[in-house]
Image 1 (cartoon, rainbow, N blue to C red):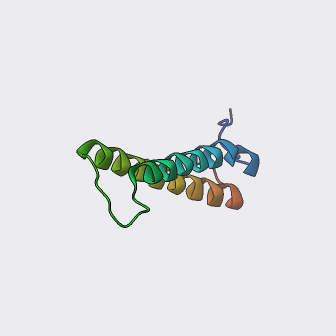
Image 2 (tube, rainbow, N blue to C red):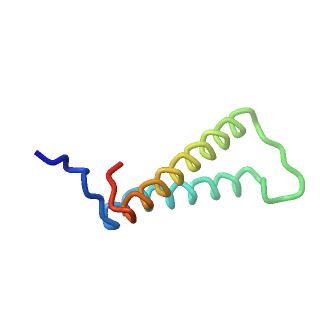
Length: 78
């Protein structure tokens, strides 16, 4: 019996792409709210933790999207 993930299509990438895009929106909004786009920035420890967390999640998500894209492009399963 063939594995359901054996043949990935570009359509299968939609949830990964949308999740990564949404995470980037959250990250940008957080950066705007904390004032990181201004010249003078004061961050709480919690703000630094949240920003670090979101950056790491966004990086992980975009790496998954990239990997899935190339696997779908090459016709391989992940």
